[in-house]
Length: 66
Length: 158
Image (cartoon, rainbow over all chains, first blue to last red; front, top):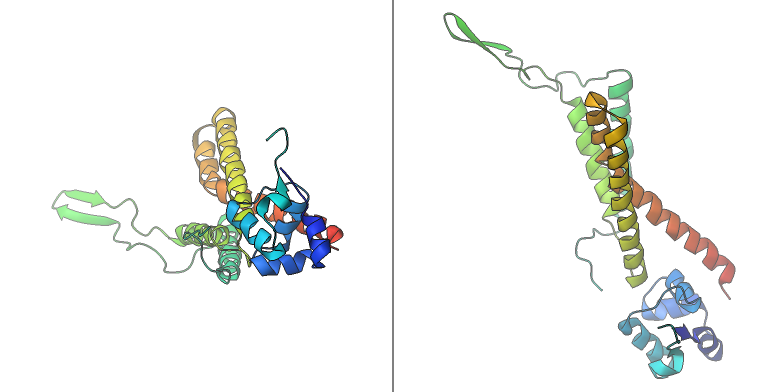
């Protein structure tokens, strides 16, 4: 699964730490999600979508191998 | 995700303190045969049952310093393993699970290797140490992963 979290953050102009704070996870978690190492749970994905005021599909996208 | 088996973060310091203190006691106990004076089972070693028969209490007078050290180390290590991180989120939970898998696997690998490389009393002694392998490997793996993530993350933050 790929995501454009980094871009969304840039648009909203918030850091990883600020996003982490908003959805109550650690900054490392945001970092591993952005780098594609970790696929977040549905709850977390929905929380992020809420922060960016987007739908989940606009941030996360399935890849061929999924 | 709630994990109700975990203690609050502040217990981590207590866990480390317990572990270090009792590990020191254990090492003293092994290396210089240190025993806490008077900390022993009652020492009526030989009891007379009747005129010509006596019963021998094999463990009478046995000093319990050893046992105390083992108990302290185990509780200390358990406490370190079973406390929350400052921010305990789903990713940390996954790290926990992965580290636990590693720890269980490695513990049994050690057991299998020991089975064919140590015999008799040595085997038993090493089995005692193997009690803590799961906990110790978990601690090393878990904190190593966290440390590496922090390092990678620090370079990546914008």
